[in-house]
Length: 315
Ligand SMILES: [Zn+2]
Image (tube, rainbow, N blue to C red; front, side, top):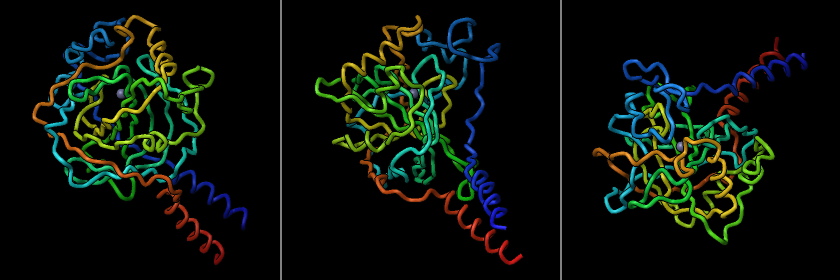
């Protein structure tokens, strides 16, 4: 009977751990364009030499709420409620693997969740799914680009507490800016990955980035993916105080963009898009992620496991 209980618990655990990520809307292609993939084999394909023509391939890329933008700090509105950047577990417990992307370097996996507010002040739960890199930065601050921008992409889930239908922005992306510094030490999480000695990271802590920030000011607005299909479903939080990056690690990423002709001057940033009347909100993030707490699925799973155990003992 005990063995049976353990088997049921294992099965339950694997079922409860499944996450149903909220899907992004399907892209709307222009007449005659069936798909747009990286490169230039087909006139509908996209790369960084033709970024001003993306809207002729995918309709959304020409819509009103696109990213990146120039953040004009003097015109932002102070946000009343701050999002807590609240990683429940300090360290990723699962491997992040390199995704095959021709236009960036990207690690994908499943980190723990954060809670974030959208602009209607609704709070939702998002899981960190991947991070990838642009150079120079995609967002500008008062017209200035930085050397690098890392995008931490979080996706909402459908679960007992929230429904995808209610969540306008299925993604929350943190944009972290980096500037070369002679005194910067290398980031451990970038080191073996940038060296091309591994294609995975078994453990990293996003809070390490945030804790290195002396100024945790962010600018929040609603925008889009900065690559095709330009889906307008992103809560953007751009942290404007740059983190230091060593010349070695900066150059390693630049060298990656040497691999084909689609990167003008070794860059993979989309040009600045018009704000088109959107409001920019300014805030200061609070960080609560250094404490280890159980994730929410584990709580529910534990409750059901206990219920099953009790049930089985009485059968
Ligand atoms: Zn990006």
